[in-house]
Image (cartoon, rainbow, N blue to C red):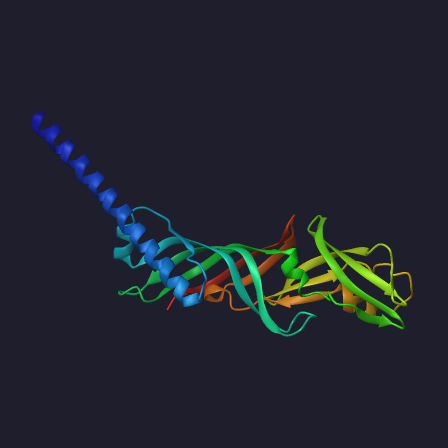
Amino acid sequence: MRALRIILIVTVILGGLFVIADRVAVGFAEDKAADRIKSTEGLASTPDVSIEGFPFLTQVVGGELDDVKIGIKDYEASTSGAGSAGGTGTIRIDDLNAEMHGVAFNGDYSSATANSATGSASIGYAELLKTAKSQPTQVGPGITAQVVGLSDGGNGKIKVAVEVSIGGTKVPQPVSVLSSVTVVGGNTVKVHADSLPKLGVDLAENRVRAITDFEQKIGELPGGIQLDTVQAAANGVEVSVKGSNVKLVG
């Protein structure tokens, strides 16, 4: 019995030491991965990286991690002329979160590729408004219009507020319209009015839609992740993202 107790005590101690070593190793790996991703993606701040699954060390031996979660705050995604505002620049994604599945890495950890990825991203209405016709634009003789606000319209719709001026005089209250928001081609957020707003004058549909409808291309997300679906929420649009053969580093 004494020998059995000793064996049990030794087993518990060794098991505890293994758990400690495993957690220390995973913490070290998470920090290194975060630094590498920050450098590779040119991020202003260090992302949150969480390596899931236990034990970590046996995953390392196998050369593949089950799941890796990555969180990036205030990610500046590139844009390129798809919005009605035109030009090339950036759009800020408030929160970009992705879960990488089946992450294979090479011997010196200089590259890592996930078999698949899912996640989410959020873009504030103020950022998306930069894409719209937020400057007065002539839509008819003596008539200008511009988008002055975006907000949650309920049921996944965006409420688009349009300010109209006739003969240099602003109409007292902006008119609004509910718009659908969709993802096109895996890299573009498109806003399309469900019906035309009443601007107080008869105008051709294409002239009105030149104001109410707009789209924004969002490119170069980390590792080649693409946009999947989008819907309006309280403070902005919520986008689901996905990808395959996603490069974390390398």
